[in-house]
Length: 428
Image (cartoon, rainbow, N blue to C red):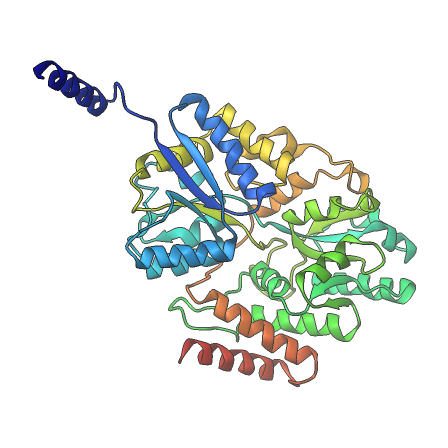
């Protein structure tokens, strides 16, 4: 009996000292097998070369379901939650404000945030604390079909690399419309994204520093005026719903282009008929607004470690070691996910990778489009989302739609309607 007890004590001692410790499992919630999940799988493979005892368990969890389950779990004190979650950037401030102790401060863990695009770091920062690891960029551009431009008598070469204003873009659209009958831009009329892109390129915010709604800025009112001009001149291919929007921009014959982010690359490449057709220019800027830039962002997500995780040290080490440390292996990781998934990281050292600078024969004159998007990303202003971003987004989208359809007669009426809906939803 004494011998058995002695062996048991030795085994316990070995386990406690790490000599015989079992490996850890770090569970990750994210969505999209071809993008986020693929990228995390590649990161796990890199980490496991040095840490074979750590299993990265990736659970496919749709975005809406993830946020709902995360909210429920945090309200229950962390029960049933994973070690790492992926959050869209617009949702970050909501969770940080509503659950201030829910996430691990990764700045305190030694992450150097000067190596990331500044606009990604802003929403995850509270005071001196930074709670996430920035992932992909939603760097935006103006995508134009050169075949349609040529049909309209325009020389695409004249525009290569130019930083256009919206007035110049509208003139291009008027020529294309007159000569070909095609509208200039695909536009999902029940969606907020394109307006968001334009407002953000002007450094505009939808909220004041105190978090109250602000729809009376020059950036917002001038962006709305541009939209109305595009609409009134028949330069928008107005569709309702995401699937119709994808059809409009992916298939020739619907419109001459669109304004959106780098992640649209995969959609455009899904149709072989688009090979050689598209050129990509910087996001147009609004004239007359100080600080307006030919750069904006739409989309993007970041990784967070749950403070309730029993494996939070391993989870933080994994994210820091692969996603936030400049090594040849990690640069190649970012280079791999760019080619494999079109996932452009916002870790600045990664932009020296061969895939970031290589020409892409699928696009007009083999433009090095990833190099362009990476350069534009550096000029994206920080956007203040606030915890009420979703409510604001929906209210503004509804107001703009009613304005375009004639139910509201002026920009002021559209703004007033959006403010009223927002206040009603917020119970103000």
